[in-house]
Image 1 (spheres, rainbow, N blue to C red):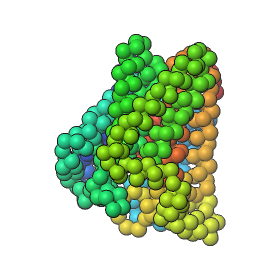
Image 2 (image 1 turned 60 degrees about the horizontal axis):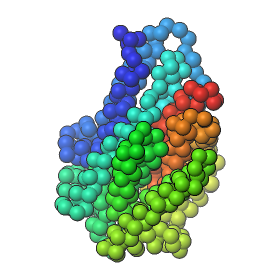
Image 3 (image 1 turned 135 degrees about the vertical axis):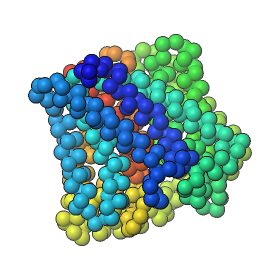
Amino acid sequence: MIQQLKNSKIYLSVYFLIFILPFLPLVREIFPVGFGEEYTLVGFVKEMIVLFFATMTLAYLSEKGREMRINGAAGVLVIFFFYGFSHLFLTSAIPSNALNNFRLVYLNVALASLIILLFLNSGFSPDCRKIVRLIFYSALVVAAFGLYEKFINPDIIGLYKLSYPTVVKNLGIPGFPKVRIAATMANPIKLGLFLVVASICCIYLIETASRRIFSFLFFFSLLVFGFVLIFTLSRTAYGSFFIVLCMYIIFKMSDKDRPLKKVLLSLFLFSIIGLLTWVAASKEGTILLRLAQTMDTETFMADPRHEKWGLIIKDLSENLISLLWGFGLGNSGTSGLSGNYIIVENSFLSILVELGLFGICFYLYVIARYSFNAGRLLKSQRKEKKNLGRLLFMYLAVFLFSSFFVDSYLNHPFSVYFWLLFAVSETEALKNNAV
């Protein structure tokens, strides 16, 4: 029976996961049924979906009754998974924190490896356009929620039953309480970065739209996402959005067919977003303040995170084994965990703290392979493949940039997107005999 599954059917659970990811932070609080003080059943929906997909995939591959094919990328991911599994036990953190970080990262690693193995052994691969559209559709709902929160009913954040004090705290900036929005993401920074990802999807959909009316609708959606993003007051999201727009213009300039017209259209997009920002900033001084802080190097250097990062590097450098191996999973994390751990707010240092230089090397391999695959897709003669390569590069740029200021490698949905898009880059490059 399993062998009769079609390509479109076997990935249904993954598609469902992609759509619901931005809503899980809120839904888990609306339905706080769970165990203990920290975990709810809804909070484990992602894990249950990944385990379901893993079970179906392994059952399908075992029914084929032949030797399983594996390539270098899948092999490295399998090794990396067991490397992380060992850090689940060889850690100085409490077991619950270690298990939490393992599920946040390594189930995504498992998902990526299974997607690659499934393609190598059956030819089944996820539909890239469907993935982009699902993120886009979910972003429309999130953006609408954000607009409702900002302009109609700010008290809707009362839906966050378990973490209401933390959400309210996150909505403020120094000297200005409750001036940001969080929508369904529970955190303004996560909301801002998600809207940046949604904007990347809009750009892809604009470039691949079959009719002009669809291009216009996606363009309008891009403006809406940019407008809502302004009210997150997230400097990381502002910088990421600027990077995406700059990359879009560079890509348009590299087009051989009527580049001047396309560059002018891109500049027009910049102008519209700039106008929306000016209108919003003229109404709220906090927006101008955050924009100024985003571009002010003195504000950046005065950030207290730098002192914390310096102490972390000092502690690691004093012990060679810790530097190479790390302190184990659960020693770094986001707010809400138990026991002693560090909120590093820097993915690279978080990986170093937990997994050491060996762990950094695994990530560097994945990033290099991802970039190589995306670069090959950029050289494709097919427009859709070229635009996919651009999307992959834009997301990687946002993921790496945001990783300097937040723990993107732990945070959902960004960690899921990273590993999923790595698997997509691998399968699409293999389709084109690019690797």
